[in-house]
Length: 383
Ligand SMILES: Cc1cc2nc3c(=O)[nH]c(=O)nc-3n(C[C@H](O)[C@H](O)[C@H](O)COP(=O)(O)OP(=O)(O)OC[C@H]3O[C@@H](n4cnc5c(N)ncnc54)[C@H](O)[C@@H]3O)c2cc1C
Image (cartoon, rainbow, N blue to C red; front, side):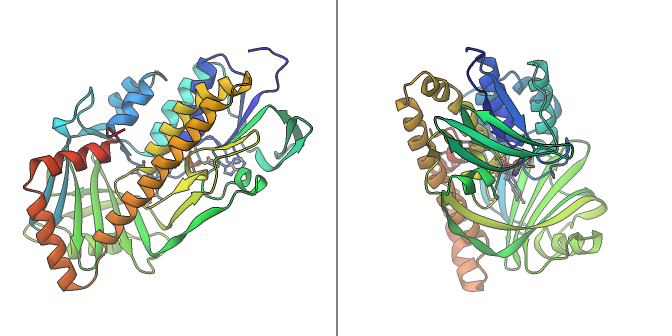
């Protein structure tokens, strides 16, 4: 690519922006990546990396390192306290990765950052995009860092800047959807847990959903719906969640809360993902419930599949880019639908509705073809 062409500016060095930067750099593109935070300041949200994402990340040269650091989990199990409702086995999935990988998002980002550095690109940290404006045939990005304000010319700007994307706002693209009423509690803990570390457990309780998943270094990730939780839920708060929703015959016992937080969760889709030479990717384009662990996975897949169409568009052929936008919006719509259904199903409150749901789940859970279809869908291998 000619050195005279203005660079592609990627706004946001989360998993989406980092993956895109690597994929473009590997193809020889000039790329600048900025992030308003200091390096490594992102919170540890996503923990699940699905099979399709591991496949996609192979070409970026990071899958082996992710596998080295993460925990391999071949099973997702849905439970009502001690009763098993649904047993999803990823061990039967086609492809090289018949499992999901558990790794906190900050570690996944660290691995992606190291790969980007290997390719000679340093993220410009503490550099915030204020807005982007079109000047003739070029884009000018107004950036702010502690030292200076910069007006940067860019051939393309890709907004990988998450839920409150300034790139999306600059392009005046509506973000259509809503916000779930209930909040989510997230905690990384050390605990004595009666169930095996080779499974992710989803508990459907009348009080709400609780997910318990193993993480490296003998830790567990707990995600639960809650109404008006404290800003940083403490050990007794998390223990109560475990006691009320987890196994009752042999309850889990928390020994240490390493990190905890609470989140409001939205379900929103950008009306478009392309506006002139501005593109949206990842959470900037779609956000949804964490049920099924789809968000980061979808963002990474958006990013890696964007590299070739974007380079074609830079050479004057926009049709692959338009096809990319169409495909990724269909994927995002279907992920929002899937996670919305899973969230509503998991958070039913009426005892009668819970009994019917649990009965249906345990019945369909006995049909192997249904179980396989659900596992394929969650793993992202139904493309
Ligand atoms: C409770 C919870 C649990 C989750 N669990 C999972 C899971 O298990 N699996 C899964 O796949 N997903 C999960 N997700 C979703 C996942 O965290 C997101 O989908 C993922 O972080 C999106 O990556 P991203 O790079 O698109 O955006 P982000 O991770 O939000 O990164 C955006 C980056 O842009 C930067 N930025 C923002 N504005 C600007 C600006 N103006 N200028 C410069 N930089 C800017 C930010 O600092 C940030 O680094 C979960 C989410 C939540 C809330």
